[in-house]
Length: 542
Image (cartoon, rainbow, N blue to C red; front, top):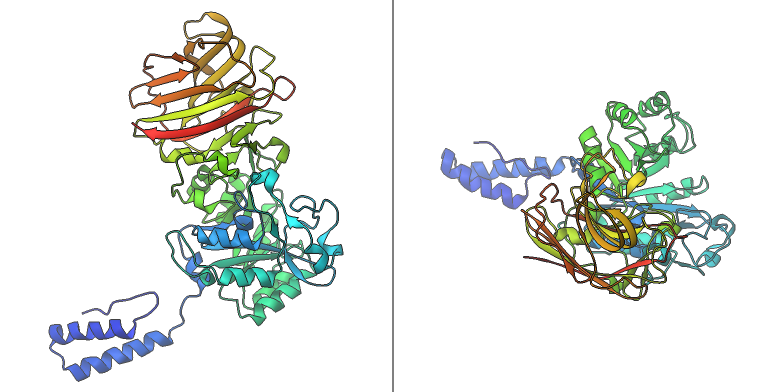
């Protein structure tokens, strides 16, 4: 009879339960079997237990909440770290900077202007008292109802994290969240090790750093050496243009436990600051776990996992997890929801704004926003309806080729745009575009040109930027700026019906795409027409 094996050893209760079975099965005396079980239980208790970091990294794939899930929370705030854990994050990333009076505060940037109400000044030249005056303000990025919160010291943030009960599928205490912590300035590096060592947090913390922590590739010198000597697990990340030879040199050191590679995207694919798949594959072959950042979208995780990447630094782990949110947008909340992803992640001028319960597309270019919450209802196998309201706020498009749209039926959550801005390399990028076109001059599905206000259903095929008309309708009355345009998209396995502005199509027998992802966009620039607002978005099954 074999002894049951557990990663955390036999408990006394488990051992005694095994004893009872062994006594019956093997005919042993109770005294003999009890003594044997006690001996096995004592031996198991003496074996070293895996640390929190070891347990976390033992997973086939693992996800870290980048900046405390900065796609939905005011980044690097105690509030963000807490909310990420409450939504089930197993690990959070923390960046710290050093104030002029030597205190560690949670901030990514040295300059205060991007993320706070203070538009001048720097952490490094401010005292802690001065840093505490402004509030973290991410309302332009995340919506007007995003809370304003105080900048916190690392000590304060740790106190909040350790007291937080985790949500999601983990149901653990916040003290079991793994922390990836980086000192963004050299002055903070020894202070960080001193603080964490004093608290005995080696089993819970991964020390994160750029290259070897001093900008070089010598893994036996610099901050990497001191972090490892202090007993911490280490993660070194790299620039996209660092040579493979330099990366391999640093990776060969026993002081380096994990490696980090960058990925950044636009609507037409990865940016030049992203590392190539070929180089990432080479780095994976060095044999140490590789983490990619930033992983905003599910398709990014799927793609890099297929290469062998194991770790993902994500600004929204909840979205990556595939767990469901409300299938309606709840725009009246005035906050970005999980899975509401603009094509351009960091540039505020290219982000939509929330205003009076509406999502207002005001970007200079055609960068649509993913309406991720709808994916819960707009799933591949079922029939569903999307009800919506649109309105041009100030002026209609002033050219014949510009329009507002909802793209739907897409198989992945990658960024989406029209024409030259569409990523034609995406083999799963096909779908449909419901285009609302004031003052248009277009070719319809019969090859005839039409002028005036029209509503069209177009198909975009995977690997192509061409738009194929499937049906063209005339609205019941002309489109007018400032007036609502109400519409409905009905999707069944065998056909699609569109019903917009009083014009309803017959069933359109096109079954090419039935993916769950929906995008809202405006195919026009700021110089040719007003902002386009989306509101009252409701989905339901039929």
